[in-house]
Length: 86
Image 1 (cartoon, rainbow, N blue to C red):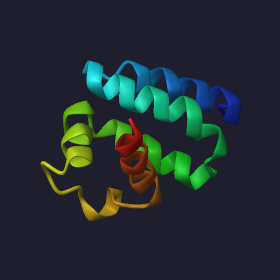
Image 2: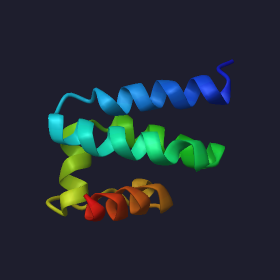
Image 3: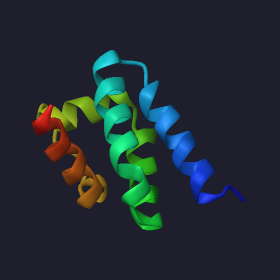
């Protein structure tokens, strides 16, 4: 089983190399600053978002597409708020 520290480092790495430069910057910076403060459930939610792919995440953050209800929680709100500060 992966330790919390290793999980966070893996998620930061995955967030920084999603495939699209804009998403890499957004999620990489977000992950570096916020993942250590998230609960295990929130890390699960973050990981579920990452699995959806960079194109979807960027479209949801921009408001181009409606995010599915099961992914529209606290973690996504944090990402959207973080994006507004960039």
